[in-house]
Length: 186
Image 1 (cartoon, one colour):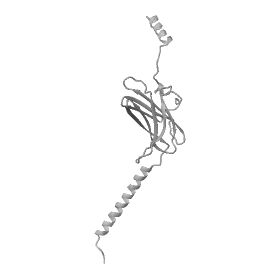
Image 2 (cartoon, rainbow, N blue to C red):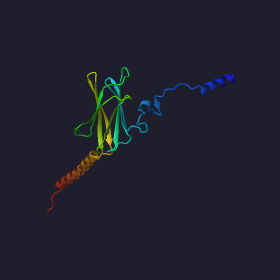
Image 3 (cartoon, rainbow, N blue to C red):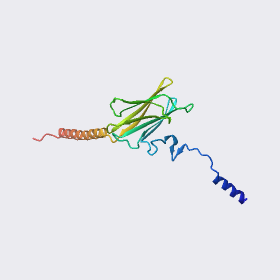
Image 4 (cartoon, helix red, strand yellow):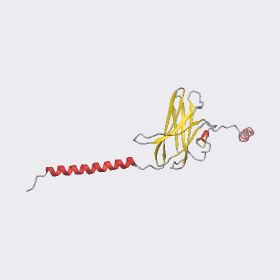
């Protein structure tokens, strides 16, 4: 009996079994390419219409004037085939006011099954990176947040200024009412 168990253990250890690795160290195998040494700064997975899409931006820390690589994987939900057409990439400022959208380029599927677009943020700020395509006569638009550095905190400073102005205005109004209630001394 011991010999049989020892032989079985030897067979299991010595004979290599085939293994397929979809995820390597927690990252999808298709994510390994020129960006393998750097995790994405943005990774957005969406289901939109008949497609599942994954959009990523590299490198990990987006800084103004540094090259940024945006990648899009899009596959059909019903059969898993990659979208094979043209994808238009664009970027715009992310703010309260409508911003002009800048077209970055139109890309086709590369040999890795990816739509890749290079870009660079000109200044610090929050941006929206858009990938759009048309399939079966329907438009598909995928928006992803992006940023190049730390933006100037306009919203926070405006809110703080309004809060201070409101407190000072309230104190001033309370003092006026208090003076109006006091009888005049002659």
